[in-house]
Image: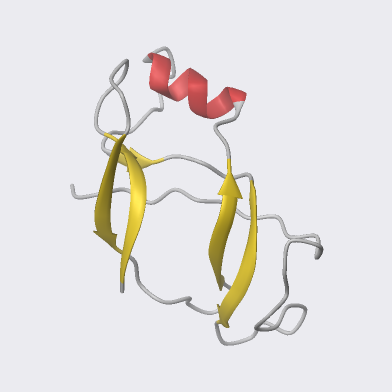
Length: 98
């Protein structure tokens, strides 16, 4: 599916709002339609260029609120329609291109 994301192309540069391809959830994963997100200290560290493990281009962010729109195989603790009032932890690490 095609989604919009704030992409970091290199350290110290502004994020670029772009359309990127996102696969559906795999086993043990859920797809969340984000309603709000932010840039945390770790993301700011990566964007600064000081993070030796920083990979560009990438979509940063691992904190936010949203609605579960799809669940992958083996997921039983969440279901479609769970919303920001549901405690959800997630990790992103989407790398755009190689």
